[in-house]
Amino acid sequence: MTSVPAPTRDIYRPRIHYTPAKNWMNDPNGLVFHRGVYHLFYQHNPYGPEWGNMSWGHATSTDLLTWTEQPVAIQCDDDEAIFSGSAVVDTHNTSGLGNGTTPPMVAVYTSAYTETSQRNGTQAQSLAYSLDEGQTWSKYAGNPVLDRKSANFRDPKVFWYDGPAGAYWVMVAVEATEHRVVVYKSPDLLSWEHLSDFTADGPAESVWECPDLFELPIDEDPTRTGWVLIVSVTPGGVAGGSGTRYFIGDFDGVSFTEAPVTEKTGDGAAGLRGSWLDWGRDNYAAVSFSGLADRRVMIGWMSNWQYAGSTPTGTWRSAMTLPREISLATVGGRTRLIQAPIAPTPTLVTHAADSAGTVLPAGQTSIATLPSGEALRVQVNTMQPAGGVFGLRFRTGDGELTSLIVDAATRELRLDRTASSVAVHDLFPSIERAPLDLIDGRVELEVYVDACSIEVFAQGGLATITDLIFPHGGQTEIEFFADAEVPVNQLELAVLS
Image (cartoon, rainbow, N blue to C red; front, side, top):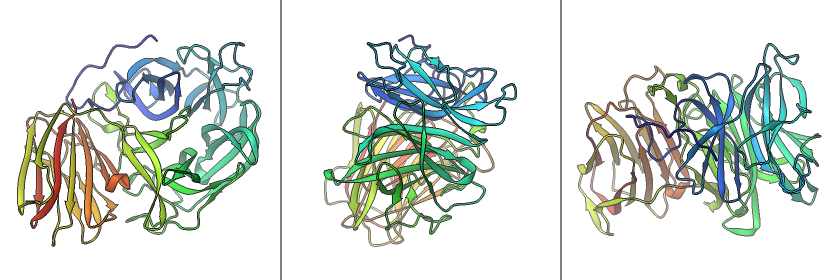
């Protein structure tokens, strides 16, 4: 493949997260694995660092860790912007878009029609296809393939269903302002039949976007499975602005039915059905790869629509989250979604505590001081202390810090970025809160810190918090703090770049 020039380094450009060399990026779409290559397509403005001219950018990887930016895949034109969608490899050429020897890679995307189009003001689903491993794309001559005459019908996620109801392509998309996931089927990706709708509660002012639907084994038992429905909402996220909800249930090939046991979703959204994929401000529009037979991997857009256009990153704007492997497990009698980060192997590991029985004193314990922008992982395994709170402080210095606070008494994890950054936006300073399920009295944290972000995985991935930060720079210290003595089994820092 022909790649574009590698991005230049600057103070906020991530070391272990994907960013384009320049210009705007938002939702990941068209995630597909084919012939040993992961393809990440995404919403992209080829002409500047602000939202607009929506096209599909493209990056590739063989390991989900190192990405190479490719030329723009599907370009907007005078009649349509290319909004979010998905991509599949049509192995059996059901669409007839192959050439007899090569199965087509088919992108199913939303045509957002412009003022110059005869369909001005509407959104419909269209196809593009590639016969050279995603290098070049042709728009299908019969576009759109599915049109509801709606202004907010978008974000199709397509997969092949093979079950009791039959074998066919399934599309989940949204009527965004109606808080509705619509389900369709097709034998060939060209003609579509409506099957069902799914709705749920939520703020009237929010819109639904970027659905995903997939099946996973429960507790690694292939005879027991659950279906997961992902829906991104903005505004109305649990931490403010944008957020991503998930529901667990069953899909019979026609309808998704939510399981009767649901969990409350925390401060600001108590009582909503389902739960939150991430409890932070900056994981939105997360969707999963097609083409992976034995695992489910998701990537999200690491930003928030409240301030995405105000981040201080110059000629480029936005990064993706770390890829996360998704599974289902039974915890406390309920089926829960688990997220495991996919991250680079450390180049340097240091220990503040690496054996059971170590006790860290009350107050502050310095772990390390590193140059600004260094990517790192911090792992913590502690026993619940007698009282008070404890946690970690990152990027301290120059009057700045970001605090991760464990409050075992209230079973809450907090990420405080109110003093973390240069001025970004009035809505940027915040404290995020996630539920903390104690496991045999233990607290387990895995934290990834990059040049402008923090991703927290708590209790083996039962809860995550993803937030952007934009510190001034210079030497930055990492500290452990506690109100009282804390029994520690492990406290490890690993440099990742």
